[in-house]
Image (cartoon, rainbow, N blue to C red; front, side, top):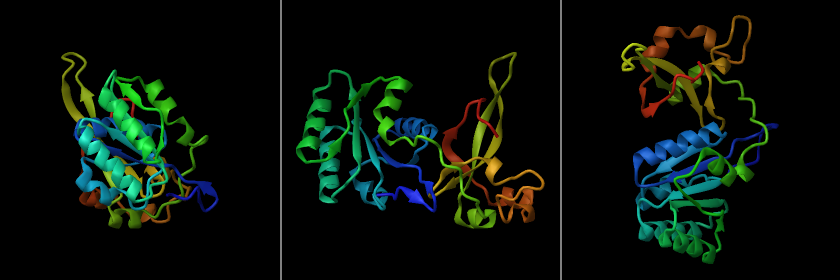
Length: 228
């Protein structure tokens, strides 16, 4: 599991979202990132090994893949001596949801109380409240040249709405950094104001060079409230 400290700062908890439907994984990852988690995702049992090293602090398991697939995943977690928490999501009044929850408890996994769908943001936040940092850690200084070479920089597209037609008329590309330990870092920490130096290399990297290296972040968009 991720260590509780990184230097002298608390590291954000890591969560792996497992569900067979891409739009559900995207929604859950977005919600968890807003709460301060670093997210990973996988679609099915066959991808599990690629997201469990290092072990995350939390597994969020959706049941769109079916009960048999869910039990295989729980069995694999037990075999790998998974030490984190497991949160199962499923339809209200679902026998499968109750059965999967009980199976995980029988295996000795640390099962959080299951969450029924549909759910509100408050219910979801309460379900993972014990893992959410009490205070968000300040991002560490980042070397932009290292971030560019490692592929940490991403473009997030914010739609622009025509106020007369209410149709999407274009999009604004927002730069974000996904640090492997600190999660999402906003531009304030790697494109500093003149005279500040949270980034060692930002002054030497021009906008054109950033533009040639970035590639769009697939499947993600942000609302107009996203800050730059």
